[in-house]
Length: 314
Image 1 (cartoon, one colour):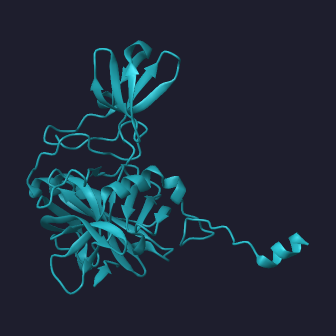
Image 2 (cartoon, one colour):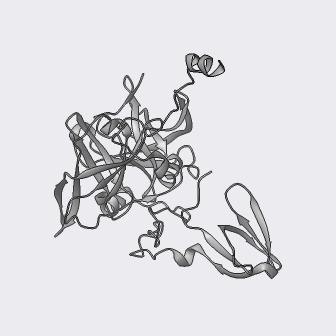
Image 3 (cartoon, helix red, strand yellow):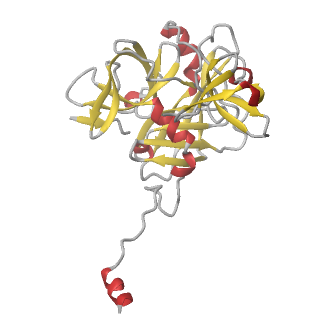
């Protein structure tokens, strides 16, 4: 029995091809030929003659540089981007150094009904957690751990707003709105598609309230079907309280969001693939939270009344 641990994706960095007719095409350049460029625009690839091109702005130039030489796998948020995503090949590093580097980006999410985990996607206080962690709750607080003078200080923020929810994929986007809140340490979203079965992964979270617990395992399978959805299955130990926390690859990039486990087994945890997280963030306006209907971001039309149809027919 699986239990919730309660208590094609748009390119984040895209190349821009400016055309001579004052229009532009945004996508990823797949090939540069002498007479043309081949550009992936998400649903198809376009071949653009060089005679029609006025200029090219590449994504690599737009992305901010990484803070230190040790962060060779992590990309920063470019101007105007809502979250950071990796565009570089993965090079494995040891978990100990990664935890020191990215651990501040993982938080504890508390409600009157329980607690879970989460992680910052940008420095402005936007964070991801599971929908079931905050479902039906109106009081949400976030505990953040920040490095000061060589040790971690705990800070609790209580002005937390629900920005968007997707109950079907068990995702929620929150925002810390406390006055005087600092810039936060954000983590980078990677790709679960690039993972292979047997690759090492690790999680940071608050299982049973034991904050900042690090567990390590492997990716057991990439396509475990549970109730009509595909999940990443991992041997990484996760428990209630890990919900909404990040599952990292060995480059320190988020590849999934941990949300459930098999209750009568060990090493049988599951995570939402990060591709669904990216899609949720890219289309967050479609999932905007509404106080008029707080448990459901969708609006359904009323079915036509047979009575009304008969009256109108007369």
